[in-house]
Length: 212
Image (tube, rainbow, N blue to C red; front, side, top):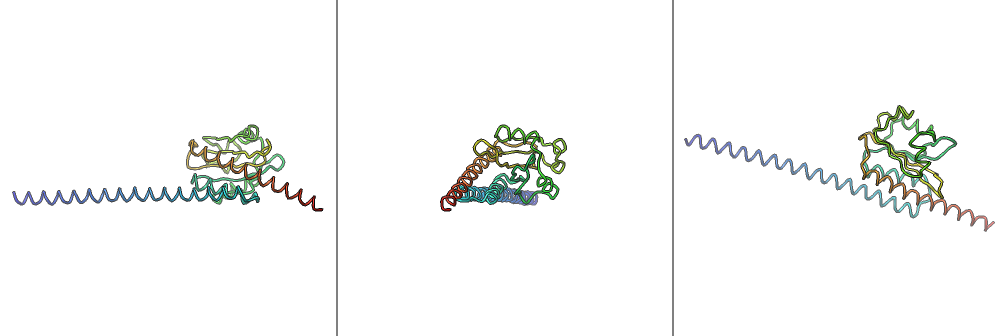
């Protein structure tokens, strides 16, 4: 009996120790996940702060576009993005995130046709258009066939769309409301930045003309 009791006690202690290790591992995992989330949020906040500062001081459109893309990448994490300007009947990428595959970069540099349905809708409405269940082949953009969702965020000045932010994800087939809100917010901030840059450029031209 004593032997059985001792064996049971050993088993009880081993089980308790095992449970302690399991709980410790679970706690360590939660702490690691929480730390990662906090670091991600901190990076996103830093990007937003930098972008906000740039909106108030920067007039270089390329720099502003890079900041906007950085905010999208650090805040949403799993997206690729590009900044586009119109050239004839095409919208050509001027700046893009470094995660894009070479074939995607080649296609967006060559240009997106203005009559691409979601792009045309964004240009006509002046509002962001979100495409869940993106089909690259159906949109004649085969290089984007691995993307699950796309977004077109127009940037209008004086009622005219002057620029565009296009965003895509390969991690999901549907945008969340949070993701849509972030993209709209970045689009509005970028619009304010371009309006300020254009006003500054106009003022500088007027000063040159007055000084001549």
